[in-house]
Length: 124
Image (cartoon, rainbow, N blue to C red; front, side, top):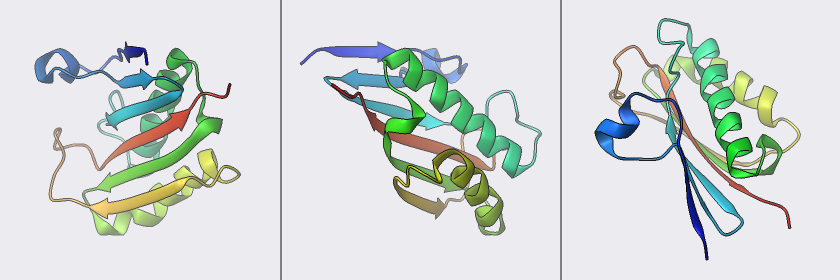
């Protein structure tokens, strides 16, 4: 199988040594994506930014948000679950991927209230 690394725009990529996404065969694995560019926004806007960045990475890998089959959301505040969930539903309401939402103590950037991972396929 052929592996292709998909870069993103995160300033953390060269420091940590990761790709925004990795395509292996017809699967795309998107790294934990924080709301870069929306650091000071509320959790709904941060969630939208995360998913917008994920959608761009998927396009760059030859897939799309329509082919996501799994997401993982990491929240820093339990009370944000519903606002974040509503935005997730805006993107995935028809697709209904397997999804996990957990609350964590902190994320890499203290201003971030959410970080999201996604897995998708590329149709044949």
